[in-house]
Amino acid sequence: MKETAMRSGRAAARLIRQKQPLNKLSSAAWVLLRAVLVTGLCFVILYPLFFKLSISFKARGDMLDPTVLWIPKHVTLDNFRFAASTLRYAETFTNSLVISLLTTVLQIVSCSLAAFGFARLKFKGSGVLFALAVFTIVVPSQTLMIPTYLNYRYFDPAGIIGWFGGGQGLNLLDSYWPFVLQAITGMGIKSGLIIFIFRQFFRGIPKELEEAAYIDGCGVFQTFWRIMLPNAIPAIITGFLFSFVWMWNDNYYAGLLLTKIKVLTTTLPMMWTATQFEDGLYGYMIKNTGELLFIAPIVILYMFVQRYFTESIERTGLVG
Amino acid sequence: MTMKPARKLWKLPIGGRSLSLSDKKSWLGVLFVSPWFIGFVFLFAVPLVQSLLYSVNTLEVGLEGFDTTFAGLRFYDELFTEHATYTRLLVESLVDLAINIPSIVVFSLFAATLLNQKFRGRVLARAIFFLPVLLATNLITVEQSSDMAMVAQNVSGADGGGALKSTELEALLLQSGFGSGITSYITGSVNRIYEIISHSGVQILIFLAGLQSVSPALYEAAKIEGTTGYEAFWKITFPMVSPLILTNLVYTVIDSYNYNKLSVLISDTAFDALNFSLSAAMSWVYFAVTGIILLALVRLVSTKVFYYD
Image 1 (cartoon, rainbow over the protein chains, first blue to last red):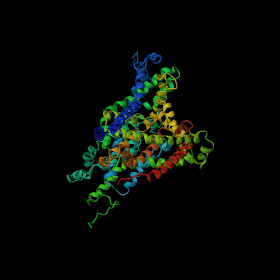
Image 2 (image 1 turned 90 degrees about the vertical axis):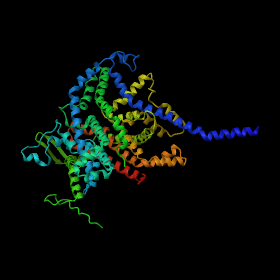
Image 3 (image 1 turned 60 degrees about the horizontal axis):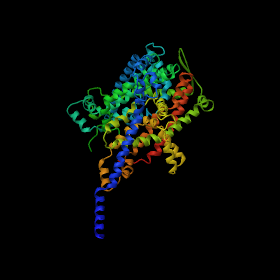
Image 4 (image 1 turned 180 degrees about the horizontal axis):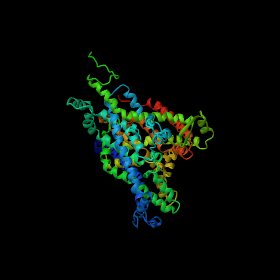
């Protein structure tokens, strides 16, 4: 009797040791907790998007109807029509797109050139210059605001335009030139960060690859163009996405340098101040629709590149 | 010892004498970096000095260009003794920063650890988690959080909005013996979860990249020795990514330039009140204060950081 009890006890102990039910239980609990956390956080992130999406298709009556929560009863495109016309969407969208694309492409070019120089073509003082490049993102852009404004208002670097009888210099406000100049000289929004990312990535590409190219008779430019850049595509996609999005969302430079040229970031706040007083609720709906129109291009762009983007993180060499 | 070709930077590549590859490369390096360098001088260094000069001069913009007359530290004096809102806003933005930094860094490390694990739907979860990086603009985020509170009230039947508030959590924490200060900090962070998420996108990215560069061999060895996942996190993961905590602290401070209230005041002072010098002085005080904070953070944290190599 005692023996069998002991035997079954021992068997149970062995079973526990083999199957580790406590470990299994805790890992199952963790899986559950993780699922809840991830879903919850995803919900918090997506909530405003769904919220705007739902509002933008509702008729005004649906907002007051207590039986309507998410799916509108009277689906309408009037909100989009009204928001697009108050935003002058065709015009502002084109301006925003042109500025963002232009600066992004130029910024990628200038930053990748500089980053390659910093990573592989060392010269005396290149370390110090790289430190300065990173330092540029530490200075708040507000500190440079007034000189930047006056600089483009009376544009005359090193007095060159004065020699040709330009008087006080050119007025570059309300043109694309300030954005082009900033981007092409690697001084756009957070260019220092992009240079940093690119440099880290270039440093991660094996030196042998580069040397093989030199032995095969490639020049430095050819090596850069045909070996380094194709290998750095993940980093370039990351840089492209960041740079485009920062420019698209920027209202600091747009507000500072553009008054006649309307972009989305400057018209969006104006639309809200214009519509909220007549009919608060409708103004609120229009505001959400307008914001949806503002973020839609980015979300669509992200849908296309997110596969490369999220998978590229592993190889971006952001670290190390 | 082999002879190294002397680096003569003053020697221009003219005159037929062929340069050695390393000389050539360093010249090309100068060439590659030069567009950036031109921009650095004309669009960064010169404006930075000018801005400092404008803050100690009275700047008058007329039709004929602009004039400056020396004013000494008058504007700095005005800021702290006369200006109605500046000091208050400065302190407020610093307090906000002090509140946000720990939540953002802790949350982003947590989220990165979560996203680094293997589970079904990870690709989708990652895609969603990086969405706030793209939508982080001061145009929308502020309204979004108030939207959420309003709608939460509507959804939950208008009794104080239980949907996204943390009253139960608060009671739980208080009962289990946490101090009231830390409790209100934690529940406050939970209530501002959207704000925190939307400001921690890049930080998650940096942590995730760091987590992926930790060698799996370390975890395997630890597992053979019988460590639990919890121990492995504190003994392996945390030290290995600790340099990135420093990076993320710095980035969080830099990122806060874009959304604090002070930047609005600075640009309003310049372009609505047309007081350019006062605005320049404001921005310099702000820069100096954040600079000191950054230096202190780097000093404080870098001694505690573990470097693998």
